[in-house]
Amino acid sequence: MGADRDRFSTATRLKALGEHAAARVYRARGRRNRLTGRAALLALVVCSLVVALAYPIRQYVSQRSDIAEQRRQAELAAQESERLRAEKARLQDPAYVERLAREHLHYVRPGETGFSMTGGDPDADRAEDQAAAARPWYRNLLAGLDTADARPHGPDRP
Image (cartoon, rainbow, N blue to C red):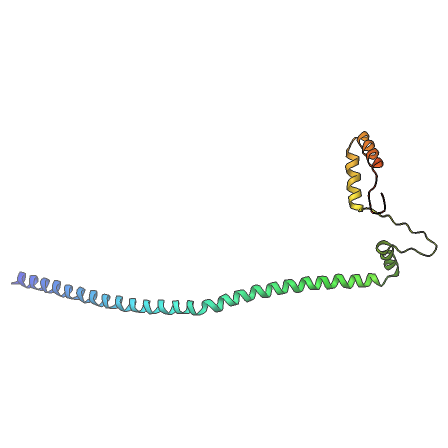
């Protein structure tokens, strides 16, 4: 009987362990369902927040770039203002104003003789001189003879 008792108790223990394991599986399954529901709710909340905050965040980033652009333009305007202040200070100097008048307006002082060159663009003449310097001397001589021989045509020339 001692063996039956041990067998019975072992069988009883196995049955109890099986029931206990089944209960744990059932509880785990129930928790898993609850966790899945919680996870779905959390995912829904996170997605809602992302959707709700997407436009304001985009606006924030856009405004920050606009602010940076405005600061850059303000810096350029400050540099231009500083340049103009320096130019204004230079224009207070009579010698600088006289030099500008002589260069740009071809002013001369009383008693000086002014000369004006007409009929050409100085940059074009300089380019032509450089091209002539690159050619052999005899081609320049022949080109000069050809242009001297040509008759100017114009409204006052027949």
